[in-house]
Image (cartoon, rainbow, N blue to C red; front, top):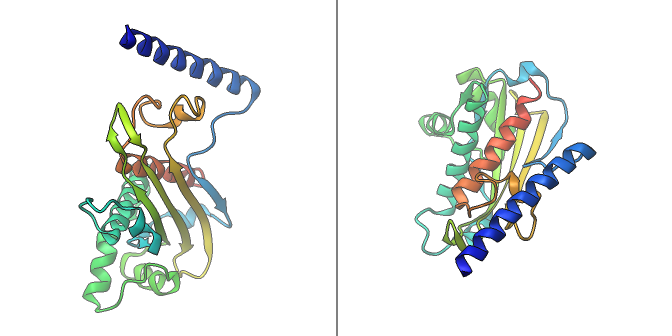
Length: 223
C-alpha cells in the first residue's frame, strides 16, 4: 500500500511538472538556464579552434571532496576540463583537449598556466593554431550520498569558465555552473531540467557533465 501511494505521488508530481512547464511556456517563462553566462565580445572567427587548459582546483575544492573519493582535487579539476572539452566537441567545435595542452607545456619544460591566459594563449596559438583559449576553476565537487533512487544528500558541483582570444589578452565570454540537485518535491519546475527529468539522483560526474553540456550549448549560440 505504501509503495502504491509513493508511486501515485510520483506520477502526480510528474503530471504537475508537465502542466507547469506548459503553463510557463505559454506565459513566456521557463526554468532557469543551466549556466549563468556573460558575453563580452564573442565573434564567430574567434571560435574556430579552442584550446582547453586543464582547470585549476580552487582551495575550497579539496574540502568538498569526500575523504573516501578516488580522485584528488587536481584530478577532479582535470576530469571536469575533459568533460567541457568533450561537450564542446559534441557541439561541433574544433577543440585542443586538455591532455594535449598539458603535454605541450611539459615537453617545453614550462609550468602549466592554469589561470594565466597571457601565458597560455600565445603558446597554444603558435603550436596548435588556436583562436581562443579556455580556462576554468573548479571549486566544488560533492558526491551524492546514497543511490539513484534514494539519496541522503544530493550531488553538488560548481565551476567557472573563462574564454579568451588566442593571445590571451581579451576576455570573450564567462560561464558559471553552480548546482546542487533539488528534488521534485522542492523545485518541481526546475527539477525537470536534470537528466532523467529529476526522477533520479545524479552522481557528481553526471551533474558536472550536464553543466558542461549547458555551457557548450550556450557558447555555440555565438557561432
